[in-house]
Image: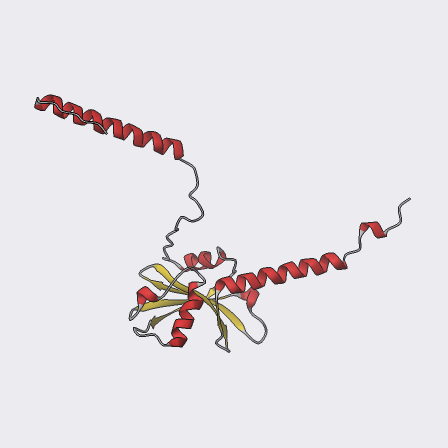
Length: 183
């Protein structure tokens, strides 16, 4: 800690100016030193949803391809008081790192986009993003016509497991190079 005592006003102002200049130089030096380095993975990223493309990018970043031509928006109201089923629904939403707790009693936009890779001949799967004031507050997957709701993380893990299993089966079915006679 520094103690700086000057009795003349001109010297006091000059000293304060020098101290501010030293702090500014330190800040600039730190900014130059750390420029271009990425943030740690735990740093929170604020997502702003302004267009349909932003919604598609949100789901693409989580491993789900969507069909932009199927985009639809509705307004839904988050209940002020939650029963057990809505609390369970919020648990599914929390898999995406979001929560509806701050939106109780508020009206949000519900954006739905078809997810072709998860759709079948009998069921269509939709990626759903709930948006309040251009910020995502909830995300989940919805199957129609059944109405089954699933979390993004659970489904992404299931997809990754299925891809690994398929790769293992393809590897096991491929003939080994050692099985062929060599000259």
